[in-house]
Length: 255
Image 1 (cartoon, rainbow, N blue to C red):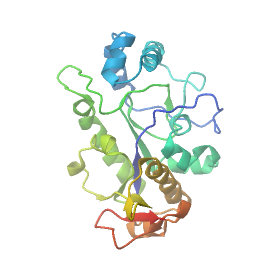
Image 2 (image 1 turned 60 degrees about the vertical axis):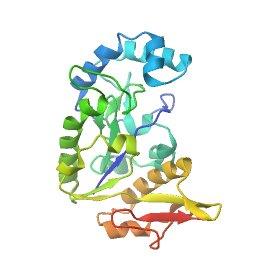
Image 3 (image 1 turned 135 degrees about the horizontal axis):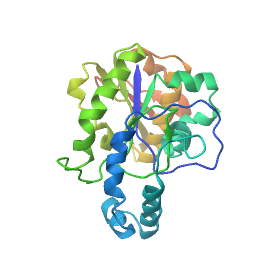
Image 4 (image 1 turned 90 degrees about the vertical axis):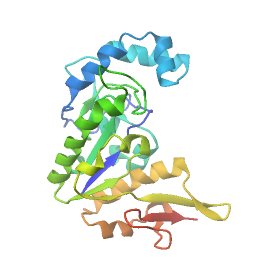
């Protein structure tokens, strides 16, 4: 069983890594190609391309200029420990043991606009480049066109190595679209997390993102390999709701 999740805009490079173990991203040559384009943009153009404020445009301009190989524990950090958004708060990788982090290597992949696919312990230098960004590179009109033929084989390979022909999609639609799922030849499950509000169950982004991280941790801690065993997920008040679940989309509700 392989899990895919999205990256996060929020990063934490101040907290020391909880493990000395690390691996290297497999598609850094492709990352370098994108950086050759991004480094040519001034801060204003970065802001316009990414739809962000002037301050964030300046920050990411500086990140693009200073990004360099080789990656070391001195200039980079393990991806699952560097991202600190809602999904990663739910996963709370910093509290996992080294044994659990190593096991997560075969169970989890992080989709990325700059790195393509990251394993949890892959070293990563700080960046922001969302998959939906319309960055052109040669004949590729955007990042989806640039990455799809590269990401899909990596995900397929990781599914085979996971020991179970199941993909658990806990990524956002923006990132999940970077995978050509027709070429995976596996069972795909997309859990949904909903909270009771105004008389009905709704997906509330903040809570759903955290729940995706909680589900990732649940799969890891319980060695889940069968789709039906996902129904036992009961973290943070969520429980399986068969009434609103559909094939391939088990729903978990609370409230």
